[in-house]
Length: 505
Image (cartoon, rainbow, N blue to C red; front, side, top):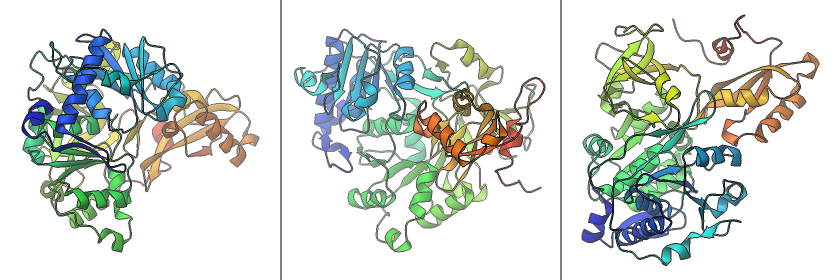
């Protein structure tokens, strides 16, 4: 279960194809480039257990660089390209990276990242960086002598706004051992030799990165979209006979909004499994997709932490609409606020008992907050029905999922409340037809006379100066007094309920 096997048996088969540029790497070329990357890491003095950071847009070299780290026993931290220099710099420092790789397209941010001993640019120049292409070309394409299995350490923001690195132990097994994800996707989604996997999302996200690398383990071709476009997605399915793909629900929405004559132009019959996760999928959207693509749509619920995993097929979902499935990793336990087990049908905090254990890097207190005697939680609220199917009803941390990206409102609140004209602020997610949710700020001004469109525009610009775009409010409303308890607790649910439809009953 490793590309080096396929480089020997099917050397000329495409391993990576970039959707727009058409650049291609065969398995033989993927093997050579990942070996050269491993050799470069060793030449820089990196040893098993060290960390590298990758700040790179979807690029032909992304996966070879990750495979080079995987076969070197290294931890590779892939960083969102949407972050500011302060946000990305925090991750580079916190993960303990000894080597940084950045894309020249991100030079405006990358040039201000921490000055590590080894910094390499991809695809052009960045001040203070060394071009990686000649550095790799100078390395032999043979395997390093001390290969061992590395792994990713990806960051997930917490409710405090500071991201947390999610790490498990390095395996002592060989670099080609089967892991839990490989077994799951083979069983659930028929990953197999001969598959063609279309990845429309940024590779710095956990699911795209891990599923692309898993497709390589099976000897599958991975097609990477530089940027998602709904019609281009359908074109690629037809052009390459795509068999597998993973999307987020907002992509379904955009595909469904294509004119009927455009949708009908493309043959998607090659698809065997289209997997979706990362955000709630509206029932009506999923009904339409199943009506169009049939029972080839699969859903799962998990998180970067990986301490639990549920799954549901199209046929099951049609009988349990809105469910995210039954658990395959960890026993689902629903707890009340006092950590008492709740019976089926009662909603509470969702925990997984007995699943794989991970921890937050440099944050034992944050790790402890997600665990108790009943297992680990992703911070979601839901219930299990009598048949063991999980339904999610809320997020305890008020996390906003906008277009499949997690946005944590506390960080945005902390910025906006520093504006001299702001007395108090609540940042919430509100319904968005395109994104599922979008960020809204409800602001209590120091002087009510300031409330108005000019001040709203000023606040949005203020946020953009301090935060990455995805975290910034798309709209601002005003409230003379936000609902706070005498203890200082903000009743955010009271604010949020103004914008969401009331539940029946």
